[in-house]
Length: 166
Length: 211
Image (tube, rainbow over all chains, first blue to last red; front, side, top):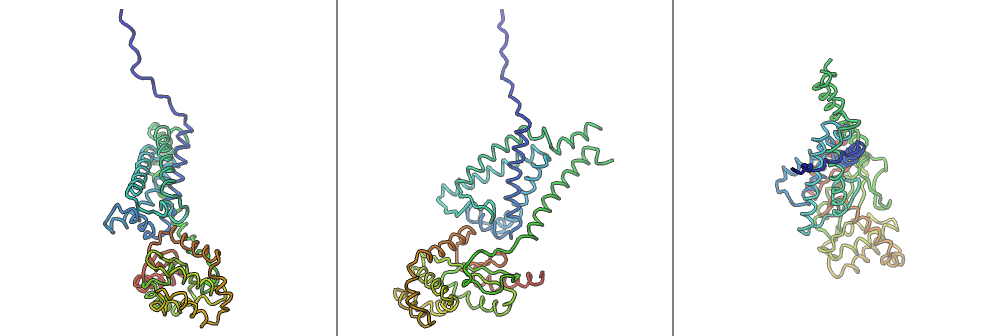
């Protein structure tokens, strides 16, 4: 007699809705604060920071990044807080945070002296090591937002309702 | 109604996200006070309410800082009433061995109300004292300014003086100052004499026009 087939994989436990909401709010708030502090200052200030990491040579590219990256952080942050295109926003935020971690690790590996991470503009000055820790934790929260961030209090739900009604 | 449909709602959502982002950043830009760090009053010039705040991170032994002195003095002459000027110590000791003793001396002169006088004397005679004769020569400038030399010499080794300089250095590092002279004019950075006298002047004019 044939043995009954074991289920191939246990079903992934669903994350509670509040964890996604927490993930959205934590990552969103940090991005809004860090981005707005940099975006409110002259872009040359953040370009000095980018230059300090010695990863890019083109001054034009550095200034362009210094101008637009803080805005991208603010927009991604608000998208997460509002729950708008949540999964895309969470994935982009996670990717951005991984880029930051990569840049910090690479600076550390090359023995570059960075007075601070430069991630919060003139507001708050975590050391590069602290910033790696903070970013790693935020990647975890971004993952929560990605997995279950649309479940409650999200614009995505409201936008989705529009589709169902039709 | 467009807002009840999916695409309409997504468009409204995008508008909300963009509006919140723009509103926050532009309101921060408008309400942000110009960068004006703490400094003892003797290291500041101009009214506290002046609309333009210039912060200089400088090293008394740095030749580039000496070059930046005339344009800085010109700016103060030209826009005097509109400017508050704050001097911050940033002695680059790896290159300038006598920068810190000079900074200490200026702090001690400041306590006797003669910071700017010694500041000017140090820059005017930079080439003369940038060597082993520095302590002797700097003391001579201090004496020439009529300072109480007993108090001046007692002040030089004080830990508080070093703390004040270290505080400025830390402040500069936090703001990613890596060379001197670095100027912040209402928060915007200008490095060196050329940037100060060209772009810096344009920036000040713009700030003045903005009111």
